[in-house]
Amino acid sequence: MTITPDTGRQAQPAAPAFAIELRGICKAFGPVQANKDISIQVEKGTIHGIIGENGAGKSTLMSILYGFYRADQGEILIDGAPTQIADSQAAIRAGIGMVFQHFKLVENFTVLENVILGAEEGALLRPSLAKARRSLTDLAREYELNVDPDARIEDLSVGHQQRVEILKALYRQAEILILDEPTGVLTPAEADHLFRILRNLKREGKTIILITHKLREIMEITDNVSVMRRGEMTATLRTAEATPETLAELMVGRKVLLRVQKTPAQPGKPVLEVENLKVVDDKGVERLRGIDLSIRAGEILGIAGVAGNGQSELLEVLAGIATGTGTARLNGTALDLTGRTSDGQTRRASRVAHVPEDRHRRGLILDFAAWENVGFGYHNAVAYQKNALLMDNDALVRDTAAKMERFDIRPPNPRLAAKNFSGGNQQKIVLAREIESAPDLLLIGQPTRGVDIGAIEFIHQRIVALRDAGKAILLVSVELDEIMSLSDRIAVMFDGQIMGECLPQDADERQLGLMMAGMKGGSA
Image (cartoon, rainbow, N blue to C red; front, side):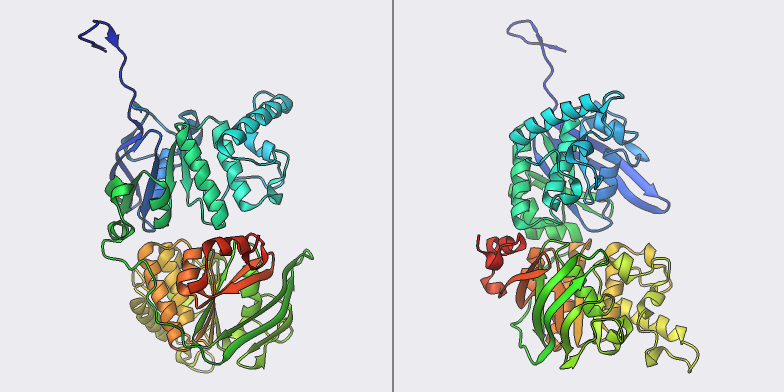
């Protein structure tokens, strides 16, 4: 306590300027040092961005702050006071809330039930529900978080589900909110609304930490940004003093091209022609409702849309791993969509390659070695045959080593299990397998999902090189920037239908966003 010279009265200590201080945080998992002596200060009432490549240590650091992990050494200060955060309940008591990339909601519960789950007061639920209903009404009015408290989660859009996660944190009186890749599954309009919510929270004095790989979002919404690389904090700077180029270089350690460099397409003959394609799932729900599209040689057709609107079913039926009705022709020859005479292996023999949206579920067997994963679907290739009965495993190992070199897969060890590679390098294993089969048609879903900015640049270059080699490419991505920069034509899907099509040079984000929300042709 100090004494003011003019009055002699005791002066109150100044409020701490930082909502969060992390000092010398270290965390290792066996021989892997995930966080190395990290220190960061997050100012009160600001939006602070954290960016970095895959494996840079961002998620580990936030998991320490939210109590999922305990640091091997270092100190956490909340509002200037040293704070022990042993678990997520301790984090909540310290005023920290977290909105995860994959929401932690009970699908068949209502909004109200999800909000009070784990925060019930007493044995009787009715008083807790009544209190939560009043609180939700106030929070919705104050922060533009309008959502029906009696709606079931499974009936809400992704954007509204995200609002429920934010409401959960605010109901628990969070003053510090951590958001992990919050716009990954939102339409542009939903992302804009989220940013309005975050600005409202900031105006009310809340502190927000935003983890994202989208530099445009960092530049638009944050006050300060910290950059991590290989487990260390490389820089913290005012966003107004940064540029996307400098941030990308700080993340990767070299200059990075932020726009895809490609010459205009030179389309050739039609490779894929689809008419009235329909898919009904095993619950009787129509997932594709009469899709018409065509792709020519030397062309990338990009399919934009929020996840869950039929894009996955489109890729899977064309790849031969799901069934449908309608007609599809590859180089003029009819494809069997019913599954009676054709499957994924038949499609590969027809020179169709498929990079699935979910590399873990469809693209890799994580416990198998890289060379085994490279051979999946192509194990009958002549180059891998020793004789009529046996595969030449050594030949496949050598071929995998060559692919790893060409695709810069790290570590370049064909015998290492797929689970021991980072997400970006796992994606490169799948891409190397499919692209180097030299297909006539490449079906590719979410090519850079969970991939860092350096690997994104490389993957985009390989896709464009395949197009320039005269191949046809059907690209599905929820990343609108990726669709607009890679595609030669853009189609937008909503609820199993194509809502409209345009050229990238004529594309307008508002128009595309309207089509992604179900407006035919982008007109309200």
